[in-house]
Every structure is written in structure tokens, then in C-alpha cells.
Image 1 (cartoon, rainbow, N blue to C red):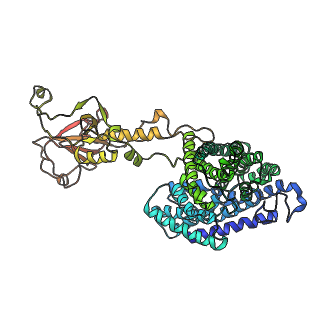
Image 2 (cartoon, helix red, strand yellow):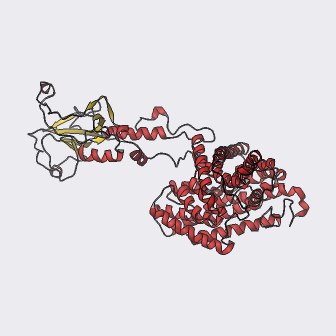
Image 3 (cartoon, rainbow, N blue to C red):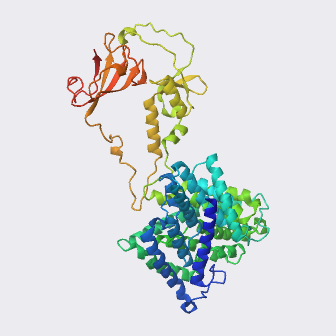
Length: 633
């Protein structure tokens, strides 16, 4: 898969170069300046409006008729395929995404090529895995391998590819998965180096951009907080623009949407042609200090708007490169400001451009490891590790405090799909026995007392049948550990003591465990906001309503008396009436599975599933009294 993703990334880059050359006369628009030339010089400035329209006429019908999931930035579709669909992606997505994204970028779409190559590599991996009938758990890892290989080959950054595949696509860490993803990313990068060389992706950086003074970390922290806000702003502008485009284009043919919307995009490009395509030449010029402060701010805001508009009108392309673009221009503007205020002691402005590049992506995608690795690998300067590490940590924290969804997961949240939702597995790990227990009004002090069981109150409760010393749970035991103890030692519950073993704080039962898990899932479930502000997952009044009832059957319970003929018989030896099925046995407060080999004893309470129309229990187990206990004679 690494080899396939590597060649796929190479082919996709050449495809972008080809379509860009057909449209502009140059493989990377901007290298020759910002005046259109080449094949269509007679168009003049109308080039910026007509070319996006022409591109929309080509890729709009392609996406609509062959693979509608190829619309947009692609990564959310891969994430949902791995999280919910067992890694299954339709094979045609590979070709359609490659052609549509290359056409969109080549004809002016202000989006990145990284999101498409992730979806292309993932779709290729999924097709291969489905063809060889790979099981879902392995297919998910293979899809992550395809995504990691695509990122690795695109940026010449294998470590970034590994973190992207694990942190964003697979969303879980395991030794087995990391090893295979590392192998895929390494092989993809080797393939890419054959065609594009082994130099770092950002080779045109000024020298002397190291952080010279410890005090400058305060400036880095301030920039990181600002970039955290910018990343959240990018996400909100992106989906607000998409909502606006949806409202304007409602009840109109979707295949024509990119062409008509291309007029608006073209007008924006006419005003700021530096927003054309991916924009790496602009980033190089920004690092070199070729732009004034006011123009850097225009580029940062314009890229957010241009990328959002490109995706909103139905374009195909990623948000990875635009977030790097926005971070680099914003950081460069910040660097110029502090350099003006503080002087050379603030360091090179390009330093803050690099830090901002990683911080904005960390905030938007909430993937700090990927942001750190991409920034360091793309620059090839490992002396920047500490300031970038600080920046991505702060930006991620700010983003998490301000929003639930990321630039990737928000697209899924708007469909009512939350791949970050808590699961019962999380509940058993995160909750403790103290969280689930029924607390005592007053904790009991632990002392060594001789139990006085022969008291007058025994006459009130009846004869004493069983005495035992219960096992105990500590308050900080995980719910998983508590459940294991309940299964082995305490069907009726176990006491919970504090961590100092001085007091009994409460009582834990299987019912309280289930109640705690239910509350955890309900409270942690975020509100899923669709384009029209959808309601929560379920209406509160229906929360406790049963989903369905077992029609045609009842559950009856029989308690075996000492003189019962069933005492001493195994369940398999009893001639049960047709339709009768014993399901459980309660013996001395312990639940026993109703196996045919279990021998019955006096006092056993047997639960039996019986047909509802059975008349032998009409008095005791009728509709008005469905849970009565009987004496089985």
C-alpha cells in the first residue's frame, strides 16, 4: 500500500501540474508572476473569472454522476469509513477524486492537494483490501496506511504521514497499527524522493530563524493563542459559507453549482490573484519577506474566504495546505509587528511564520502531533521543535475550549455522526467505583467488630439463611475492575471503601454500574448541530421508554420447595411443556446460567420464558400480575 500511495501521490501532483499548465501556461501558477499568460493571453483579467467557471463545468458533473463523496476536502469521508463502515470506500472514488481535485486546483480552486491524496490513497487501500476479502479490523489499518502514505509522499515527511494516519484517520494507538503505517509511509516517501528529490518541502527559508532568547517563548505563546482563535474561525467560516451556498443553490441542479459559483470565486481571484490554487509560491514569498504587513493580513483572511468558497460551491480539495497558508501569513504578520515593537531581539519574522503554520493547523484539525511533525519535517530545521511544540499545545487547548468539532469532524457532526462520542468502553475505563456506587448517607467506620447476628430483629425478618464476609472495592477502582469483582464475588453488590481503607462509603450493584454507564454516555453526548440546528440525539421524554416488548411471551418465576419433585433433577431431565424455556436460576443470591446439566436444589428460583397464551398460570401470571413468584410443586 505504501508503494501504491507513493505512485498515486506522484501521479496526482503531475496531474495538478498538467491541468494548471493547460489553464495558465505554467505548472505552478505564481512562479511567473500574477499576470495570466501562456495559452490564453487574449483573455486578460477575464481569465480569473472564466477559468474557474470552465473548471466547474468539468468537475461538477464528474462528481455528481460518479462519486459524490469526492466533493469537499475528503478527509471526513475517510474518517467515517474507518470509524463506522469498517474501512470500506467505493473504488471509483480513487479516479474521480484525483480528476476532480486536479481540475479544481488547476483552474483556480483555492484548496490543498493533501486532502485529496489522503482520500485517493485511502480509497486505493480500501479497494485492495476488499478485493482480497480482508477482515474489517485489518482493512481499517490498511486504509490508514494509504492515507499515511499519501501525506508522506506529498510533503516528503514520513513521520507526519505516520501521525496523520494514526491521529486523524485510525484515531487509536496500537503497536501493530503503528508498525504497518510506518512501513507504508516510509515506502511512499522513498517513491516520492525518486521523482521530487529528498530536500525538505520548504527549502526557501531565510537563515538565522532560531529562537535566541528564552523570553521569546512568551511571544510564541501569545501567537499560539491567536492562532488557536484563527483555526476555530477558519472552521466556522468554512461551514457558514457552505450553509450559505446550500441556501442559495437549493432546488437547483447540483452538477452546475461549481460552474455558477465559479463566477464569485473568480471575482475574488481577480482582486487577489495570489489566492489561485494551492498557494505554495505565495508561502515561499511570505517567508522571504516580500509582502507588507497589510497585504499579509489580506492574504490570511482572503485564503480563509477563498478556500471556504471553493468548497462551498462544490469544489474538491483539501484544507491542510490552506491552514498552513493562513498560519504562515498570520505568523509572518505577527513577526513583523513584534519586530517593529521590540526590534531584533524578537527574532526573525519568519520564525513566527513557521510557528503560526503549525499552530493554525493544530487548532483547526486538533492534531498536535501531526502539526508538530509536519512543521519540523517540512522546514528540515529541528531546532524549531520546542517553540513549535509549545505553539501547537496552546493552539490545541484554545481550540478545544472554544469548539467541540474540528475542521474535519464538524462535517460529520452536521450529518448527525459523532466519531468522537464516548463509548461504553470509555466509561468502564474513565469511571470509578465511587462514581457508580449508591453512597451511604453517613460513611461507616471500618472497625474489627464481632458480628452480633442473634438479635431480636431476626424474628421480624425471619430465619437467618446465610452469613459471609463480602469482598470490598476501593473507591478509585475502575468500573472495569469493579465489574469483574461483581461477577466473581457479589451479584447482590459489594461495599466500596475509601482509598485509605478507613470508611465504607457506599454499595455498588450491577444496576448502579449500568446506571452510571448510561449517565456517562448521556451527559457526555454533545449536541449535534446540523445545518438547521438539529435537536439532540433523542427526545428527553422518550429516554426511558422501552424500544420494544417481547410479544407472545411472559417470564414466570418458580421457587422450588423442599418437597418439589424437581429437586435433585437436572434441567435437561425435566419434560418442559412446548414453548417453555428456563433462562436463569438464582441460588443463594447467585445467578446461575440455565444449562441443561445444572441440578436443581430446594430454594432455587427459576425464571422461565413461557408463551403468553398459556392458561396454566392464568391466575398468577396473567396480564394484571405478570411478575408473581410461584411455588413449583
